Length: 221
Image (cartoon, rainbow, N blue to C red; front, side, top):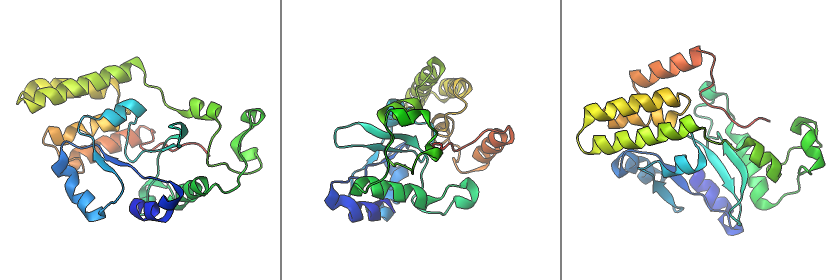
């Protein structure tokens, strides 16, 4: 879907950049080759993008304008409704707002005064948020989050050098520090030889959801 959206809107200056958070190129290669993208499709083995934008799960979508400003911060969006029965997230809603933004279609945009009014009570929905709203919704990592990223990076470094037992301690500690960060908790699984779609992941997910916590947290309406 992202390739199709790029083809649809590229003449308007729109560019899709997809980033896979994977252990290495071979893990992402089958998916990239199947999609046959003509837009930039990157593989982030160091989780640099997750660190820079404080992404804690995939998929995460960020809108960035031609000036390099974030106009819609970290959001959960899918290109299709394949997983809608699990996530409850409708693909068309986000895609429609994205098309409206790129095409410059007239939609009410929040003024500074409107920031005190809930978005649902304004005269319509603006796909691009005011800077104040972006700042309010942009997730900022805590000290524990940053330490968890450091533990994850150290564990990965140790694992790459065959020191699996030492790496395991840092991976566990990273998960303890940032249990909500599934780019870390799930991201360690392939490095540790665990299937990230297998029983260990399902058990982790069931425990998380069973405690009343959301696995996907899209932006509020």
